[in-house]
Image (cartoon, rainbow, N blue to C red; front, side, top):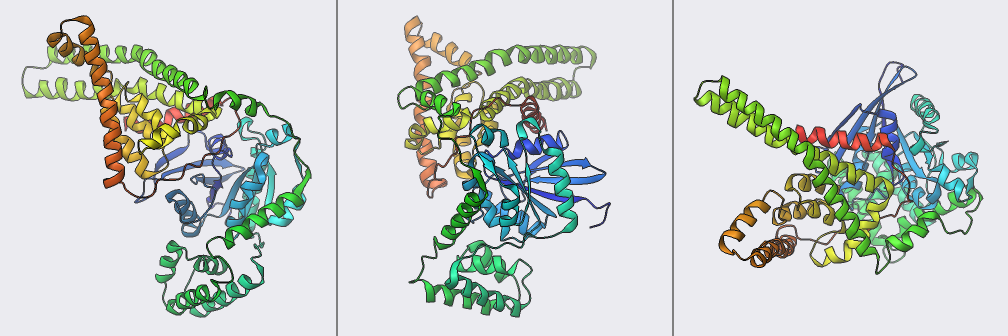
Length: 517
């Protein structure tokens, strides 16, 4: 690798493994946030300079697997196989290593140079867990670095290892053994792919995916010349062995077996059987009875914080633009130009920018709840209620904020991973009565129902009817427009910890920038 060439690094890992914290530590404000072409999945890239080398980090969506089941998994996989990063940095949660190694097993099959960042080492140490890094490196073929992303420990060593591995371009050279029967069939398909001579992806990985009947990989192979015989052979092999092995789960079983084997052989000290601090908190915060009321109180506080505190600077901004508008009216002769500047540009831009404090405080609150680990518990607690409405547990937070303002509510829907859930949530947000409508409701209620109690009941009824219609339309949208199987609600409950100021600030900065643009 040329000394002056940019090193492209794919950052992969499970949700809640600390991957994005590490990405923020390394790249700081040198980040670009957008969407992958043609999909709603968020794309984050960041630059860093280290030891004179230009590094481009691509923060892949957090996934537990690299199958074609979800859009996030497909995007993460396609970035690696299509964009050819120079090295993969696989961030693993050291306190939950066995499950994290399942993704590592799939990354090994892509035959890319790999560094494993054993993150959350402080949590593992607190639990009494110790690993043999040399043994782990031998079993995975990757360079192992111990890190604590939250406090930026091990970042320098990780960057040094990443540059070194990228320079050597040495693939791990370790494969998951799928047993005699499957290994024989994989070898047959690899030979057929070699004979075709046109496929540019790792041949063993392609062979495995064809046996798994991965639809995305099948389409990829169809795009190459001379592959008809390969696809026919894969179909024939699947038919031949379908009664001997369950092809839908057998590969997952072997990968999990490999993950368990690496974990057991690398473990030098097992975790102590102790109740962690997070376990004690969860007994209260996810309690069957108290979990929901506590959640409601937390959401009320977030709601009040955004609207009450945000309302102060919002008023200042509105007053500032009103003064600017009055100045424009006084100094520009009456006519179309005056109307364009005062009513169009100043009033229009001012109306949008007046919501900026709400946006900042909304994402400050969401970022704080996410980084402490409570947001995962909130989605878990409310999921039962939301599922009955055809929505997802995570939908509740943006919908609740819709009572303050629909703009931050729609932006808040980005916390939903699934496209259909996100769209349904956005579409029913206008049914939540925002604070701007409240004065109008009060005006009409007092005009037509002069009695104080009657007008209060009318206003409350309008709010309540908005929620009812929101639920009705959510079910209609889910059934007819965004139909299909509901996304399974799988969410890891990460350990509680205090968020870092840098991560919170970057989250607010990104969202505010996107809103203004």
